[in-house]
Structure formats: structure tokens, C-alpha cells
Image 1: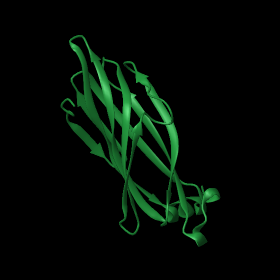
Image 2 (image 1 turned 90 degrees about the vertical axis):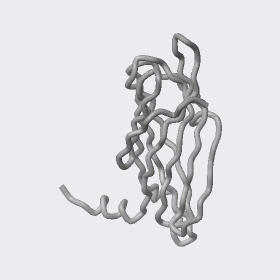
Image 3 (image 1 turned 180 degrees about the horizontal axis):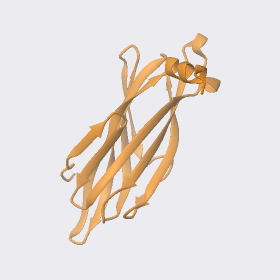
Image 4 (image 1 turned 60 degrees about the vertical axis):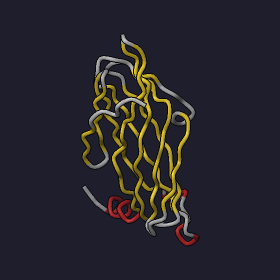
Amino acid sequence: MGDPGASSCIPSSCTTAWKGGRLRVDAEPFYLGEHSKPDQGEYVFGYRIEIANLGPESARLLWRRWTITDGDGTVREVQGSGVVGEQPTLASGERFEYRSFCPLPTSTGTMEGAFTFQGVLSAGEILFEVRIAPFEMNAADAGARAGRTG
């Protein structure tokens, strides 16, 4: 795989530079209480991912890799082709958004990972990796947000 480029990350967002430009990945987690069964140790979190092509060259998402850590420190890896059954190609200025979910046996956890992209340059194709910044999943945060008023 080619040089992953330089990544600049803040919580829930990473921008990665590659030979053809820059890609930004933003993550937004949320608790799916209606699908969870806390009394049975089943907590379901959704997340929204937005990928933005900030550079002049097109890039196609080929592969995903997630590292998921539950509140007890148990780690599992999930990887596979594309995302939600797609391998989207993002031209310059385009964005792609998808939603998915992650079940956990605890009320808290974190996710982080990477996407492998194929960039198309005039000199040929290049594979590169784009980081997905760690984001926290916390069922208690959802209750605090729901309890807030104006």
C-alpha cells in the first residue's frame, strides 16, 4: 500500500493528505435506546460517517477496518469490503454519507479505524489509508442530551 500520508485529527474527525489531495472523515455516534436491552447487557449504538473529498483527484473507498473497544476493555476487529454494501467513488468536492450500527455488551465503548482508498492519478493508481478518529459511545450521554431543555 502507498504512503498513508499525513493525518490531522481532532475528536471524531480526521483529515488525511495523499498525493492526489485530501480526504476528511467525520464520525457522529448516537445511542439507539429503542434497539437496546440494557437489562440483558445489549447496547446498540448508531453512527454516521461523512467522507469529503477536499482535493482535485477522485478516490474510491475499497476497504474498511474498525477497532471496537467495549467498556470492559474487550477489543474486536471488524473489516470488510467497502461500506454498507458500496465502494463509492468520490470526485473532487463530493461527499458520501452513510449510517450503520455497533452492538456492545456495555453502556460505553469506543470505535476507531481506517478506510483504504484507491486514488487515480495521471501517473496511475495508488492505494492509501485514511484514518477514522476515535469516537466514544456512551448510553448515559444520550440520556443527558434527551433531558436537556431549550
